[in-house]
Length: 621
Image (cartoon, rainbow, N blue to C red; front, side, top):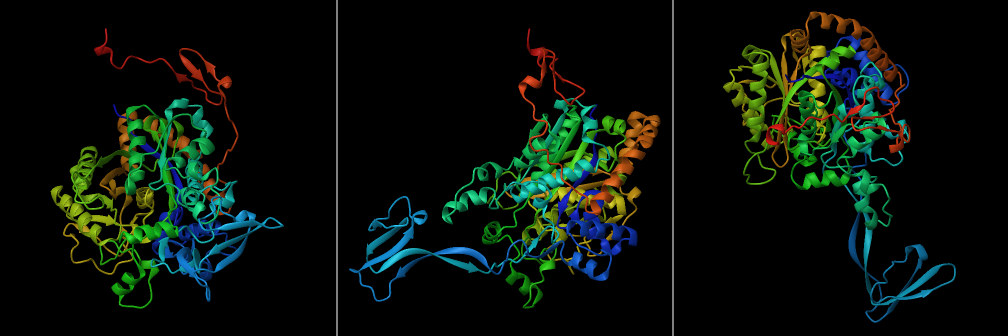
């Protein structure tokens, strides 16, 4: 009997704001919310953005709306990107046989003296260099304009590094600490309560970043430092690793000794890690899993790399689409419309999963459940970035499972899908064909499709975590976000059985049973997840555990829900402090109680069991 992986907490931060309590979702649909919900999210944004005054005043509201989501790049100056140009300096008036002299400080002298130099040490730690000739090879400092000025960025003024002793952490790891802390604190009970009910080895953390940490404090700095006259630090290589978000969560947020991992799958990275968590909970190997991804790729070098691939929405192309001489940064990403490329973004989003029995026992909040994630490759390809057939399989299998769990009627009339929806000309054709043809195959006449990269941009590894978080918001507020950046569908989009519209779609949350969230990753890394609505999960729990168990859960949940709401209020009032337990609770082998049947760890009520049956008993004498 498979255990059901239930979502009992979630959190993080992306260009729409704090993810917990559905605030990021609310930012997407804020103009269609009631006054109370809109005001709550404006308060949350004001706390993140360190704003003073009434967050609901027209001026403050306008500032917050303008400085969230996809917009003109603020993380660096796109009009003045530093670089060096190699050149030959010719000395005016000098001849090839003349001697040229110049002076260096000791710290500036190269370790290997270049050929043709004659070096004389002077007083005061200086060196005179003489060389024969009329020219020298030099590197000239320069600046250039970026051909891409749009990106999804965290709300203006939000600085995760200022919230805890970040010690030169790359920005992606700062996001991981903030996001995992937000998810853990959204639970409504302390993590130590789980330690009293769950064995140490039955926890798991699965998280990664698609590209690693590429800013100066990570791999980017390790590669740049020797070329710009700086020293490589002792942290840059280690903190730049793709698996470091998981490591940070284990070591500094929850202190886990359970299972851990980081599976990398380009734009499907979150879904690959979610699959690990789901599989381990379903099998009973783990009871709790923190799953997510964090990525901060909005740097000049990464943008230029994707731009030269032809993948990004360049300013020139956007202006050509609009027939203007001004860039509409807000509408840089236009899924399923005439478009010019995707828009890079940053994000960190995490979910806490528990098996159904533990979720009931804890009185946990039940936001939904993820029964399965499907992953398939493309087969033979013409090129690594080119489309293939794997995504037909992942979506088809996800739809078939949803039908088996719920019903054909639920799939056909009460489901929706979050498309990968990157905003590239190729994606609009290939993904719309996949969705449209499979809708036909399963008898879906009008399948609602969301494409939230229109608002958030493409955060690479966490992209599908953004999608799942926004899907949960639909069950909380009865709205499927429209594709607000488009005014028409492109002629080559397949849409006969799809609902692709600019306006938000109002739905009855209790009449929406299942959602899908899809990723088409670079290199053929396709993945599709299934999420069941909270009312469907409740019905499944009733069938398995009985009404008495649900009644007991409802009673226990009163205090849990109140604690979750209290955390949200405190965070929105500026009282958020990430969990960062550096050097606290560190254990050594001498602290453990060891026997041949169990390992007991301080802080946990249950032990790690060493009583193991032979899984291959039928193959041994």
